[in-house]
Length: 238
Ligand SMILES: [Zn+2]
Image (tube, rainbow, N blue to C red; front, side, top):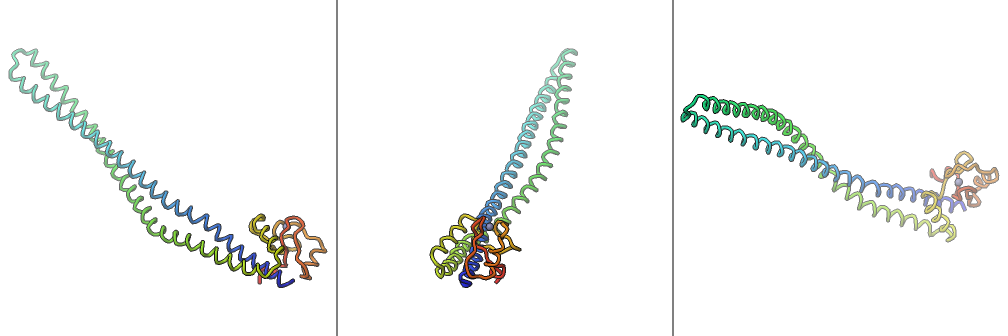
């Protein structure tokens, strides 16, 4: 009987291991996703930054074009000034020229603030590019390793499961079934230890009679509350 209890405790240890692998099997793909998401996010941010700068450049070109047209117009008016006969016409044309010159200087100050905006955008984009490079470097550094770990985990789970099944074969079939059901239904925890007179799984206080039986190690003790197999602590520590 003591041999069976030891086997059960050893099987639980292996199932604990499988449980940790299973947690990693859920965790590692998440890490992989995070790495990829960071690259995607950095790419999107940089694209948005570049399109903002392109928008500024477009405005600059449009305003520069306006200035060119006004300058052409001014040239034309200046030429007409030579052919003007009356003082009144001369004044009117001159004020038209002055108006266009004002317009040009207004646009020039708009261009100045656009230039500032452009410089800011350039700085921001440099920063966004650096962040993208960083995210891509992080991906290069970790992706392969994570994928290898994920593949390796499945192998380790299989190996550990085989080891556990080998142990299980030494036990009576009903006991294996009971153990299997506990693993499946009780949070991967079938064998627990007597924790200062309570079930190590659910905390249920053990009757005096059960505590004595536990020490005798002549039969398998099940928790009256959760049904888990209870063993003395030294079985699990061995
Ligand atoms: Zn219990």
